[in-house]
Amino acid sequence: MSLVRRRLLSTAAAVAAARGPPPVRVALTDSAGRGVFATRPIATGEVLHSAQPLVTHPSRSLFHEVCYRCLKRKAGKGDDSRGDCYFCSDACREHAEGFHGIQKKVDWSLLDDHCRRLACMVISGDVGADCLDILQPAQLHQGTLIEMEEEFELLKSTFRKAGFQEELTTLLVLTKQWYINILARIRVNAFRIELVASSYEDLLSSAVASVTCDASVGNAVYMLPSFYNHDCDPNTHIVWLENADAKLKTLRDIDEGEELRICYIDTSMDVNARQKILTEGFGFQCRCQRCLSGD
Image 1 (cartoon, one colour):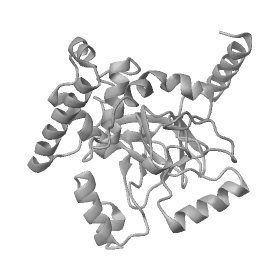
Image 2 (cartoon, one colour; image 1 turned 135 degrees about the vertical axis):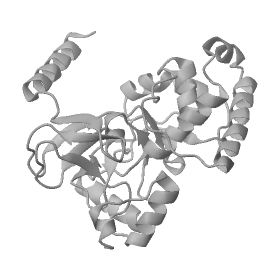
Image 3 (cartoon, helix red, strand yellow; image 1 turned 180 degrees about the vertical axis):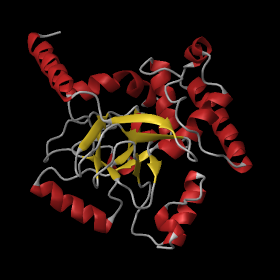
Image 4 (cartoon, one colour; image 1 turned 45 degrees about the horizontal axis):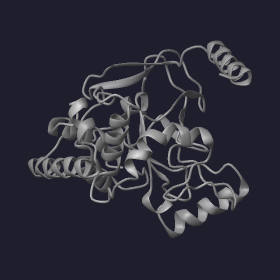
């Protein structure tokens, strides 16, 4: 490790130590499983903590516009792409080298983006097969289970055709149950990433994108942010600045012991639309104060 890098890491560690641990804790709620709670009074606008993603995936249409690993948008007209995708830095390219090398050998268009990416990361040794086990799974209908079983057979066939039979046999992790459990967790815990503009030019681009097409640059799965429960009138929100590193910020003053909640969907929708999306997409009926009041 270079002297400059050691100094940077030492400085970062010193800053983190000075700030202390984030003012949150994970604990059981009365009705929604685990949740995140404040360990002290927190002021409006305070950054609670940041979080790096466990798994990311850029939108298919933006493989040459956002970084394949961290989802950072390409700056200007410079090009640092290598064939099938773009990397914003040598560090991102090197970090993704293992699983990207596996992914680019075959066509994955028929498989779920996140799950096949995670499968490639497991086979390459970048992450453990159980890295998402702690997260809450989605409630799956029988029809969905049948679809997943069919997808798993396709996944195995795809790996075999790509010449990864030995890795599959050695790891003994890519079982049908593994696939179903992972996909169930990804479906309910993946965040849709919309970057906040970092310059005037980016602001104009973002404004155009939000009007003409999907403004999302991709999706990501996190650990601690996935423990935040939903509220249609949230006291906390999650933001992304230049890349997929998430920041959790308060929207109003928080009391010690108060649960911190984010909104999983568009808060501008009416109550019926919100209930429909949360029931069908996340598997629960929202009973927050805003929904109970019919707002």
